[in-house]
Every structure is written in structure tokens, then in C-alpha cells.
Image (cartoon, rainbow, N blue to C red; front, side, top):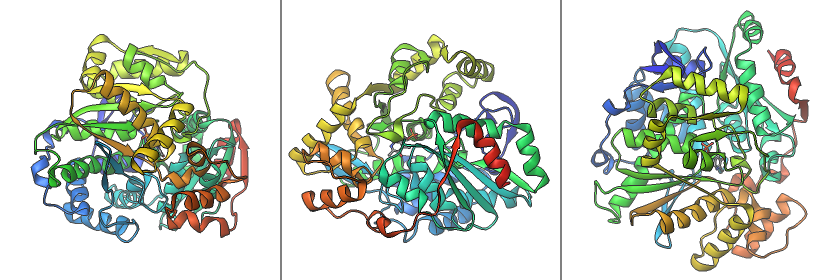
Length: 490
Ligand SMILES: *Cc1c(COP(=O)(O)O)cnc(C)c1O
């Protein structure tokens, strides 16, 4: 059963939670009995990657059968990833990199967004709704494309993606504005990611907007990581990485492993906490931020303060000051104190700041460690790791790598560390080239080719073919025009 983080009054099944996206009170649906849904590490050792997904999802999504999930995983993943393995774990130096970017849009969000449309269409049948589902999504760059790709031409659904104007890389933008499909829309917002996300959240909370939708037989829903259907598929790769380490003999089964996660909206790292609560031997979850270090400060001090300058960085998918999924963690760490969570979220909305109780922070500090890296450190890390090991990483992964080094120096306890790699370096080729000491070409595509030439590594196929694709989407809106934009679409 799932309840909203802001009130336990109305528990729902997984399908309802996925269908709705966000709870009517503005809270996020979260499982109340994670500890009872145990999945032992031993169990997954002998399983294929797909089957690890099936087992994990089946623990988390109570009213989807294993057979049903097997079908969803097969349709969503098979033939769409570079390897059957889905998410390879690669040894780099004396650490491991969990490569989550081998999917159709070259970012880790593919793992969840290849399944979400199918989870939603099934959910629609389960809750007995005849409504069309209209997905609204704000993106800091990668969610947008992965969601567009996932929902492209999926029967009974449509999708509108908002991205910050000038706030995404050339390649990310090209990926979105060239998206095909009869049911997709893409629109730039004159603002930053938080503006776009706030805009989308306020449309969901807007009674009139939901009214317009209802009249047309449309249900508004979300593909952002506030949707439970986004979170659940992410739990599986923690199991997969653990199995890879155990199978290669790098760890004994039962040995704890630390995971270092480049973090923005706190969804990816929260999935690691779910895995831990389900029984995976997770040591520390290390939360890595860029110059937008609101989570670093929160985890260190207990005060969340979004009233600060927003930095556009070289790791744009982490340029976030309001990390939505932290709300789910606060709910879990406070022993499901929904009044407390509702109050903190109200503070955040109204004052831009809140302080979590001692007890919550004690729990959090026992599980998490936090650090951050600026752009200069990010570039230095890419260059250094490439020189020392030959491994080429993107800017987001580099933030995590850098924070891992700091963690090991200052707080590590000798456990094996896995760094989650969330994007292909070819998605951010200009920055990566610069990190390698090369001059930056005029645009992202020239940079991609130059990076291929310099490293001898071939860019992923979906990125190589982008340049030749026609632009299909040119819409731009002011921040306060988002509601009107959606009204016209419904
Ligand atoms: C979305 C994203 C992140 C941040 O993940 P969250 O779940 O929002 O914390 C990090 N890196 C890349 C490349 C991303 O696309």
C-alpha cells in the first residue's frame, strides 16, 4: 500500500499511485511497508538483468503480477539498450562505475522512462479508467528526451515537455526538438528548471486545469520522478550492481557497498535507500551535488534553504534547488510523520526554508554522506581520470567521482564504492573536450565529432544521427504562460 507523504488518510494500490502521479494533497505516494518487501541479494545473483528488474518491481508494485511485469520489462527494454546486460558495472581504478546510460537516449532516465508508459497504461486498465493520460513534465535536460521517447505514439497517452530556455546542452536540446510522434509536444520556458518544475506542479494542483481535462476525458499525470512508476525501476540497478560485484568476486555476499550518486531531484539516490530498506547490503549513500549545493548543506546542517543564487553549471541535469524526492525520504526517516512533512513542505513553499528535527537528521546522517564539486573540479576530474585510467566520463559522473574521492579521504571506511554514471560523455561533448585540454568547437555536434576523434571512442548511435534530423518543435513560453499553453493542448 502507498500513502501520500502529507496525509495517511487515503492509502492506494500501486496502480492508483502510478496513474495519479501525484497525490491530491500535493504529496508524493510512498510505500509504507518497504521493510516487509524483502528481496535478498542472494536471490538475484543467478538472475539475468531483465529478471532482476522483474523481481524488484514485483516487490514494489503490489498489484502488478510477475507475469505482467515480465512483459512490461521485455517490451520496454529488449533491443533498446546497447547491451543485454542493460547497466554494465565497469571497474575504474579501485572503484566501480555503474553505467546507466546505455539506453535509447543515453541517460540513466531511460531505465525508468522505458517502463513508465507501460506501467501507466496498465494502471489505467486496473483502475478502470477510460481517460486519456496526458503527461506533463519539466526537465533539466534528460528526463524530457527519455520521456518523449518512452511515450512516443503510445496509445491512450500524450506528453508535453517543458525545458528551461538556454538551460540545457545543445545535444540535449536537439534530442528533444527533433522528437517524432503524433502525441508529443515540447516547449521552452523562459526561466530555469525550478521555474519549469514549479509551473508543472502548479498545473497539477490547479483545480480548473484538472476540470478542463476531466471534461475532455483527459487525466493529467506526471513523468517526473515524483511518479512512483519512475522510482520503482531505479531500485533494480542497485541490485544489479551488487550482483555484478558479487559475481566477479569483488565482494562477498552480505558485504556492504557504498554508492555514490550524482544528485538533483533526489530520485536516483532515494531508490538506493529503498533497496537498502528492502534488504540490499547498502553501506553509505553518498549524495553528490554541483555548485547548487542545497542538499550538501541540508545533509550537513539540517536546514534546507532554497533562497540562494541558482547556478547554471556544466552538469545541468543537477541544477536544482528544490529536490522533490527528498520529501519521500523525510517521510520515511520521520517514521511516516505526515503532519511534520506537510508542515516542512509548507515552510519551503512559503518561506523557502525549513529545518528538519534532530531525530530525522540523525537517521539521515547514519545513511547518507554529502559533498559537492564545482565546474573547475568537475573538469579536472574528467581530465585526470581519463589520463590515469583511460575511462571517459561525463560531467555528472565526474561530480560524483570527485565527491567519492573526498568521501574516501574524510569519512570512508574502506568499503567498496560504486559510482553511478548517469549520462554518456557524448551528451556533454563541449565540456568533456575542454576537460581533456582540447579547444571547444563552435557547437555541440562539432564537439561530438572532435571528442570521437580525440579519444577514439565512438559516440552512441542515437546521438550520432541527431544532426541530420529535422527540428519539429519551436514553442517558447513565459513562466506564467505554461498553464495557458496546456489549456490550449487539452
Ligand atoms: C536526472 C539526472 C541526474 C539527477 O538525478 P535525480 O534523480 O534527479 O537526483 C543526474 N545526472 C543526470 C545525467 C541526470 O539526467
